[in-house]
Image 1 (cartoon, rainbow, N blue to C red):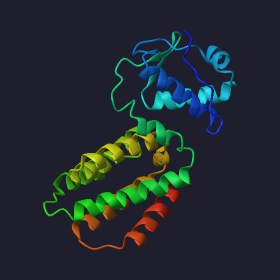
Image 2: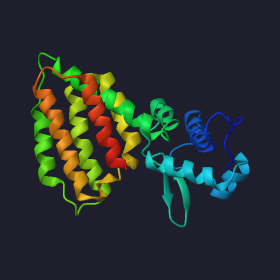
Image 3: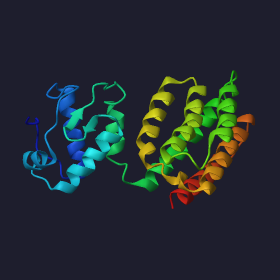
Length: 230
């Protein structure tokens, strides 16, 4: 099949443009759940691009659940596309997701906002966050795969999101975590599991109190994440 394609915007990376092309074809109805996508070679010919950006775009689309690769059969639009999968915010963040330093910086400032929203809530409830943290202490094991450990890690952050009771914070937060999830490969070392638990404990200590210096906290959190990625 031929995709509906407008002129590629060279102000962005080619792989990002390919992702947007697939998204636009889904939104305008040219592509539907279950449809088979052109092969890598066909995409290269249709779009006039090289193999590398096509493969990069495919990895992104697979990671966020837009496409499914069936061995020996090809690439297909997944049958369980959700509103979240096509969230424009996800694709907007994808455009900048290669700038890891800025992504870390934004995430940490956003998480400070979340903590402050919970702390200043007169009816704050930390029970779920406490419960998730205790379960992480028990569940995080070096024998688990990085993917399994990343999922356990995110359980804590999702609990923090829910504790804000703010639909805007929850929607944006889930989008941020969906983007960074494929990059959470730092659990290959046991020391980073310990660091993650220490960070979550630090979050809890902040939430239990009512006063903290946001600048110092952000700097500590950014340094922590940069060291884990390195």
